[in-house]
Image (cartoon, rainbow, N blue to C red):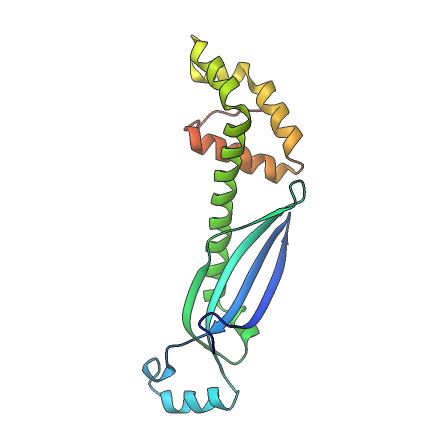
Length: 181
């Protein structure tokens, strides 16, 4: 069997373009070293009563406006032994991996929205900021309409707008200041 061969794949739509992907992949480590009753476990794996695999869980986001999908960082857990692949998805290990995958995807989306913002607006806003004599908070308040118009034009859902704003605030250290009231 190949190194990353997928034995089972399950996808779950979480809404707003987010999908969780679970792949059960071939586990190349032997169960012999993993269990006290390894001989019995190995027999049950060989007979098909138990599944022995490496779990991979990651989250994706499909942006309907751009038609592109981004993938967050995958989480892996080897040495999984369950009665079925589906049984793993009911375990707290899967829940932890899912939450970690969602956090990874959220962070990636923030990074990409900040890059998009900078790519399209950096020169205009940086020039305006360089000439501005007041504080950063005052500058942001005075330019909230421009920033708000950009957000309204490029994001449909409130969740996307909020994620974008949080990404901008995190990237620029604008904590404690609301860009749009």
